[in-house]
Amino acid sequence: MRWIVPWTAVLLCAPVCAQDSSLHYKIQLEAPGEVSDVLQYLNLFQWQKKNRLTPELLAREVSGLPAAATELLATAGYFAPTIESELRQEQNTPVVYLRVTPGPQTLVKHTSVDLQGVINHDPEKLARVNERLGRRGQNLENQPFSQSSWDEYKKRSLQILQNRDFPAASLLSSEASIDPVTAEASYQLVLDSGPAYVFGPYTIHGLSRYPEFLIHDRVKIPAGTPYSRSELLELQTELQNLPQFATALVDVELSGEEPYTAPIRIDVQEVPLHRVNGSVGYSTNTLLKSELAYRYLNLFNRGWVADSRIRLEQREQAFEQSVTLPQSRSDWEHRVWLSYLHQDLQGLDSQLYKTGVSRLKKGDEIERTFDLQYQIENRRFNDGSEERPQTLTLNHIWTQRKLDNRRNPRNGYLAQLEIGGASAYLLSDATFLRLYGRGAYYHRIGQDGQVILQGALGETFTKSPEGITSDWLFRAGGSGSVRGYDYQSLGVKSNGSVIGGQVLATASVEYQHPIVKNWKAALFVDHGGAGEAWHNLETVTGVGVGGRWNSPVGQIGFDLAYGVDLQQIRFHFAMGLVF
Image (cartoon, rainbow, N blue to C red; front, side):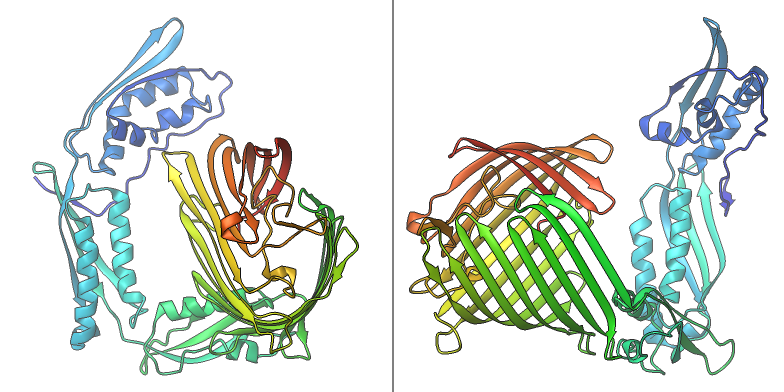
């Protein structure tokens, strides 16, 4: 006996009538675990939580349980189950007994796809598509049959054709043959490729505020090239990442007759030219804080982005002005900027003036930055002495983010490497080379737990740190570093102040576990420090507990840490990932 399926199982839907007298009932289910999960979709289980059944409707539902459960189990590949149902009255409470012996689960033993249409006239494309279809079918063979996997197989097989060259491909027929005696299934598909399409010209819709070249420079699909869905999605992603557009949609309009071209239609929704943001808050590193930012998105009618930002905190005050040019066709983005930063931390009063130009390229995982900047710093120490170093530096930053979820990662890693330096012969008071790296590794443990490992390592190679601005030296301590110690309190003691050292090493181990919805508890150990050289580096340890809230804007952390070496307790607050 053989069953020919294509079917889609539909859960039984009994009429739901408003009743004045509902009842509570219990269900005693005897079934293997994987089958029990499937049976939870029966109306009997769904309605138990809603108290919608009367005694009459409950009795009717129980009598139809074998048929309903048989149909439901077939969607998971169980075509020969033994099902017994019984309704009893125990201590004035109805109890439904449902016993299920599922029988053998059907396995997929064979898959085949018959390709029809013009693809058969192109041996190269036919071989490529057959290879991909064959791999997809092999991944299903000897796996349990399920309605969802059958539907997914049809969908993905058709997409293999539609994603490249043949966007008008169609499914002519599909058949899943089930043999309940041998518990085997065979999949057969017949696909029509339709004509092979090439891209046509593109049109732009929705522009009014911004120049068209913002989009022209992003389109790298010449008319006449073979159709590729991935190229459309890549263009759409690039346009969505431009700050001038709230949304972007890229699609094609297929011609139904020769020549088979696919003109590209680009629809964008613009954002306003001006944007002002303000915020107030608190940081355990720099205490009370406020910030005001202004952005203009079409400077000189060139699509240049002008950003102004002022930040006022108790321990830091900063201002920055920058102009960012749109990405070039080579995908590089350029930015010119100037900034001012005033800090009063650990007995060191610093005023740092910067200006520079940056060249940035972002990929799906890797980001690269080349940065040329000039800095002048006024440093005043606790004993009243002052320094005024200057540096002209060239720096390269390489960053990789490989995470399962960027906002709330459970597995993956972040890594950043920097190399930069200056020469005393080029507008600098000292010659130095600075190497720095940091990273974070996320690893899920069991169903709910998670371990996070973080570390940083750096050294500035120079004869003497005198004449080097603070940005190119190292301090540690505080949130995001060694918790249990004040912000940037770990460094070199000089002139009654804590200044940056030439070496840095920090490491952290943290375990997180959920406690309530969107909240996790954390246990952590931090260790490390900064100093003038490796041979006399003094490292310290911090331990503590904390809470993590996965808020709509990212993870927010609260930590209560104990600095073991100084025997002190510090509270830390942090928002977002490490970098």
